[in-house]
Image (tube, rainbow, N blue to C red; front, side):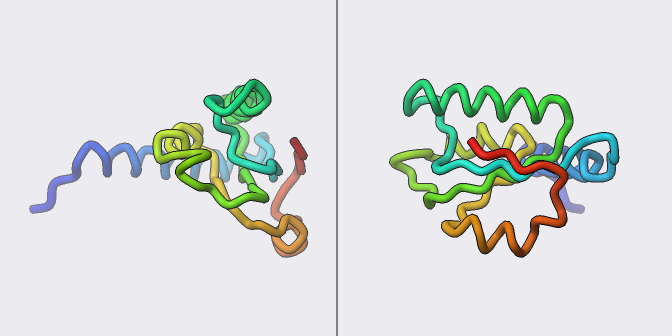
Length: 114
């Protein structure tokens, strides 16, 4: 028999929560644009951005965080990335916002530019 570790149980719980959020038509699908990952340890503006992301996520909205800059450990290490993913936020480093938006814009109800 297979046993599921706590880590896998948390991942399964997160996937279920994200899946339910996606099915809830009363919640918005938001494309959230940022220049860099909102790491609260890197200055007050990024802390405010992280707090805003947290609040909107707690309201149950499905958020895709699209970053212009690639995520590096020196800017947003594994702990920082986990804090963002624990919000139920999908984080993508696209580099080119225009290409991503042109491809997926019809999926979103709201585009938020930070």
